[in-house]
Length: 103
Image (tube, rainbow, N blue to C red; front, side, top):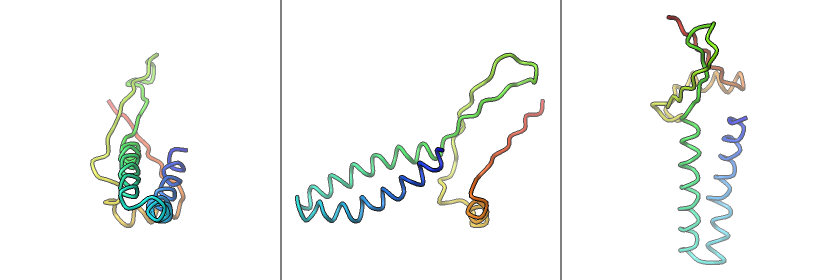
């Protein structure tokens, strides 16, 4: 679900920064276009934080009655991923991370 929303945002962002920004500039001037692009950048920063942050729910032991919540941040942005990884994601249309805890 989150992946679909992030992908949807990319399309909206591209449309806003090109088509809509040009229309705003023609109607309201260059300063309005700059303000619009600044707002888009602010939203895009929030989306990038969502893209690089994962929440993991796990049990330390199989018999535990409680679940630990761990937030993990990505150390590199998605555009720095290796090409073969991106090709595999594109081919399989999903990205599954499996974690295994051994103690």
